Amino acid sequence: AKAPVNVTVTGAAGQIGYALLFRIASGQLLGPDTPVKLRLLEIPQAVKAAEGTAMELEDCAFPLLQGIDITDDLAKAFDGTNVALLVGARPRTKGMERGDLLQANGGIFKPQGRAINDHAADDVRVLVVGNPANTNALIAQANAPDVPAERFTAMTRLDHNRALSQLAGKLQVPVSEIRKMTIWGNHSATQYPDLFHTEVNGKTAAEQVEQEWLRDTFIPTVAKRGAAIIEARGASSAASAANAAIDHVFDWVNGTPEGDWTSAAIPSDGSYGVPEGLISSFPVVSRDGRWEIVQGLEIDAFSREKIDASVAELAEERDAVKELGLV
Ligand code: NDP
Image (cartoon, rainbow, N blue to C red; front, side, top):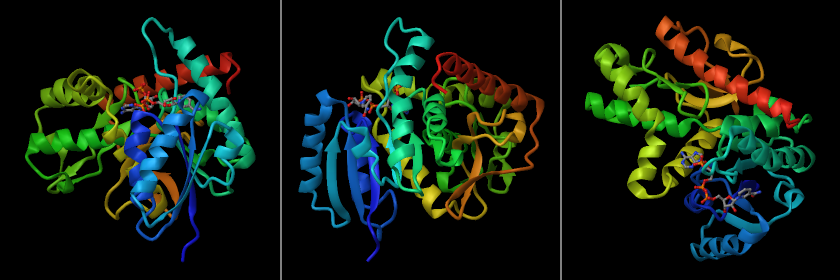
């Protein structure tokens, strides 16, 4: 039998945590042959709620679930961890300045980066979900100097999946007919969902939709979908965010299908003019357990401007957290 994989989830008692943990325990994160041990990290006042979720996990009697530890201690939470899903974060509240938001999250992701550095397994993979995800990932990565930078990633897979679904609806095709969708940049309103390399029925998607739709409907609908969900549901997206986290890690571990790619925010190597080190979303494939940026795509003036704007925002966030001494 395979050895169990240690999976740490932070913010385990939250909405996304509730949607995520059952899917991990059922084998959807790593595959149906891989047993898992869960480590749930919460802040002290939420540990009891996490214990409640753990009781429900026990009551599912998942054959692959080999243990659940619940803690508010970082060293315990990340001890020997192979996959760390950093979900808990400090949300932006009304009237909060960006500096305050980054400072509050620095207080979370800096010590978590250090704890991952000191305690995680050598093969640790980190996915940051908690917002501002790209910059939180950068903070954690910068504070884990002994872990290869490429192991720190942030989630743009939900944006990617939203883009697939919007396009499928527009073209009246199943999502399975769509290849090579790309989200570029920051997981924020400046993100750029790119249809110029996306393939549907052997042609690019961009030439099968009106340019007005692409510019004035598709891009803003994808970028503002989170707000639309809050408006409709009265709560932010949770199950779809958890689903995207599952997709991201599954593909990272198991590889992306031949002839397709996906989107993930990973440390830039300078590709496509994105400054080295920024954790920015790219078209990526996963091979042998590593993300690789798809190379050689032609970027037209329209896309260039959109990518540059989102990357400029990431650079500003990086400069702000640098000034705060967080990276
Ligand atoms: P959720 O579980 O709904 O969200 C958690 C984080 O995911 C938020 O930062 C949220 O950002 C982010 N997120 C990223 N993408 C999405 C998306 N597409 N849709 C929705 N959210 C997204 O928050 P809850 O408040 O229910 O739970 C958070 C939990 O984290 C609490 O239990 C809290 O105690 C815990 N926590 C734990 C910490 C720790 O373990 N050290 C530290 C801080 C909090 P956004 O707010 O921008 O939507």
